[in-house]
Structure formats: structure tokens, C-alpha cells
Image 1: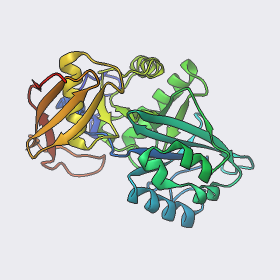
Image 2: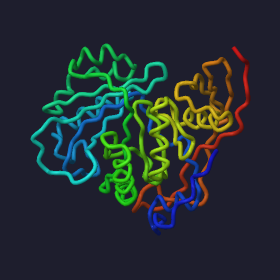
Image 3: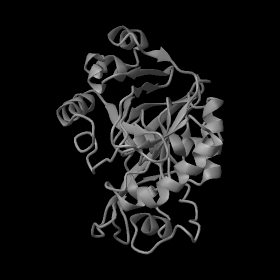
Image 4: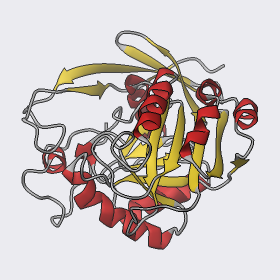
Length: 316
């Protein structure tokens, strides 16, 4: 597995969970969130640690909708445009709905007067990648062709996301205006600055402005980059680690060329669209030395995924 890239000295601040992660060169493959679909709603103003219920979004709606999303493997999040955020919003809220499933990867967008309009959204259809049923449930949604980038900047959730995420989103927004959004939580604070690229659901950590731009350019081509690749949210954690291992072995960058097809207790099978397959050993080990998974928490002996060399299977 590719180790985490070295941190610039300007970002390696003592005591931050991301500093521990960089110094210990913790591997990132297999650390993305798990979600076959994503639903995002624009909510400016301040965010608390649990933004769906601690923001200017209606807390009752935010909590219940978040719960509904989790039940069908869909990730719900709040976004806001880069820059200063007014507390009051008297305008429409941008919404994104995405499916990350290879072969059924798409993104829809709309503007709603009230986020509660999302109550009508067919979340089960989002989870299975059924675009027609999703549009039928919320007719205002339209297909979007350009990928977007979400950068975690919620300092109430973790200090690293504010200190490292905000400069990244600011710089990236200048390079790709209109395609970059602050996000309330993407998981993996210790990999900050971290970002998600939709609709594919690929997640990267320890990004710089240049690598973030490179990843967006790759997404435009239907590809990804290996630098800081944590995985694609479509797959389980073990599946993510296996897919990244195959990409590193083969150099395959096409997003939809690889699929995770089976998982056994100690191996994961990854197939290529051309018929090739690989069996990838994937095990977990206790991280040594102990380290915190978030700022302010005590170091502990967390489990990390380890992959062996993928073994080629038969050509179909």
C-alpha cells in the first residue's frame, strides 16, 4: 500500500491528529466512508459537530432524514459555498444527489426553496442507482455532467478540518470556481485535508491544491489518481483497500474499469471489465504505536487494513 505523502512543514502542527498520521505514514487505502449514494443540501451559516441537527437546517428534519439515509447506504451531508457564510438564507438551497455504483454512476442537481422538500426523495432508488425513479420522486432534479469536489472544513467536528481544509477549499475554488463546496463531515479527520469527488465517490486525503486539481481533472476524464486515494465509497472498507491495491499494481485509473465482486474472510476479488481478475489478501492489524483518530482524543491501538500483493486470476 502506498504510504501517506510527506506533509509540508507548514501543516505539520504538533498535537493534531493529522500530524500523528503523517509522521507515522499511516496508509490511507480502505478508509473512505461507505455509501452507494450521496444526498447533499446547501446550508450556510454555522455548523456544529453534528451538523444535520446542529445548524440552521431544521433539526427535526435533519436528524430524521439522516437516519433514513443511513438505513439505505446513502450518505447525507451539508455543504456551503467557499468563503464567508451569512447566518440567514433567503434564497434557494442547492441540492446534489449522486449514485456511485459503477455502470450506474450519475449526479443530479436542483434548487429547493426548503430542504424539507427532500422528504419526497426516493432514497432506496438513490441507493440502488435507479436514476429514473429518483427523478420521478423529485421532478425538479436535472442531470449534471461536471463532477464536484467536497472538502471537509468543519472545525467543530475536528480542528484539522478547519486548519487544513479551509485553505485547500479556498485555493481550489480559485482554480475550479463553482465546482468546490465545503462539507460538514467526510470521515477520517486524521487524513485532513480530505475531499470527496462526486459522482464517483472517490475520496482522497492529505491533499494539496495541486493534487486536488489533478484529481478533479482526472474525474472529468472518468478517472482517478493514486495520490492520497482512500477508496471509492461504493465498496466496503476491505473492498476499497483491495481496489486501490489493484490500481497500484496495474496503473489502472479508469473509475469504472474495476469492480469488487466477492469478499472472503482473508481475501477480496477484484475484476476488470476486460475479464481479468485479482485475488487480494486483505487483513487487519493493530496500529503501532497507538495514535488518536481525532483531535483531542487519547491515542489508542486502532486497527488498520493491510493488503498483500494481488494475485492474477483467469481471463474471461
